[in-house]
Length: 439
Image 1 (cartoon, helix red, strand yellow):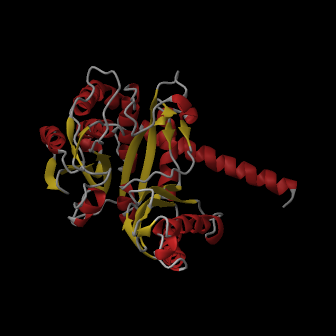
Image 2 (cartoon, helix red, strand yellow):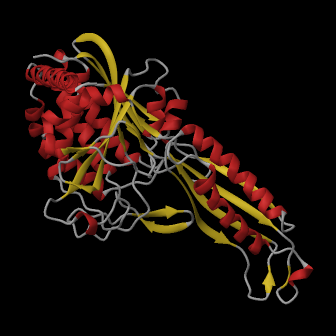
Image 3 (spheres, one colour):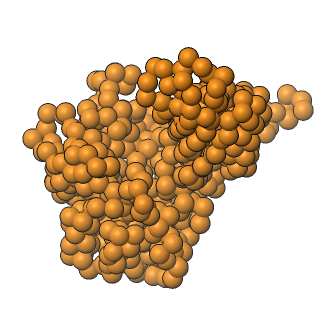
């Protein structure tokens, strides 16, 4: 292609881009004022967040939280369903005119973490987790998610006559994982019929993060967060005295062989130019004395991928390597894989549509495209059912060094509440745009 052709193509692309931008700005100008709606509800959102933060509840135990949500949604005149996936709450807002259905989701559960942040509303709650008494804290910001979506619901109810379509508000329990022996979270909500009567045409979710400054939005098209699968490898040998290793089969040496060999899956057996992947061992349990070679060792770890086909292949390779590595030393290995969350994939068309909308809310310098995140999110289940978009909201004050702040899940996790109005504004504007709302 010659220079003239390239210049012509650049001009055409620029013209299309400008036209699209003008269209988006024009569309926003004709909608209800999302900024004012967010400002009107800001104080309530902060109050709700502080109350929820002071009264955190673990996964599948969000009884008080769900009641707070239920009471608020009923006060708005919404159709409310409770008890789905144990403590989940779902409400439907019917717009003024027939149209699509969109879903807006917030997760509700806290973590077994003892808070160390010096706040007037800091959590003092304790509970039992895996047989131990633990502190309970909203160390991942789910209290803010609930409060912001309650605010979005109130905002949209005020302008419901302008909505061309309906909104499903999804308040979901157990995003952090159901207790052992229980089901929960997004998967159970879907299993119990969340989308059975009417599936949303689009679904949106938002998550606060300390890795971004207050008010900055992180949005990535395509794979955004990794899948998560946990695994246990039970290695069996034959117990013997430590002074006579030839009298038995050493499962510790076999385990070391397995751990080393598994590293070749990522480095040598999958195409990492397609997508990155991670296999990590998190625990090795076996033996009790220096002079006894045990008969069993347990290995525990996690698999993270960004491609569903690669995810399936790695599971097969892991079990195959464990079996054969153990066998070469006379031991045996049983691999148990506990399927976790799928890859969180943002629908590219939806991201393309909503990116200029978010940019109009926060400004071009406050909207970034983050790198791939190896953490997992069960919002991914909704996005497997219908086009989904999941984005991040920064909550770290601008004067703090991001590399030094406490991460999500830390007992020192801190939220700058100035970000909450930005979150409500952004999600409200997304909903108005998705439903073609007009004044």
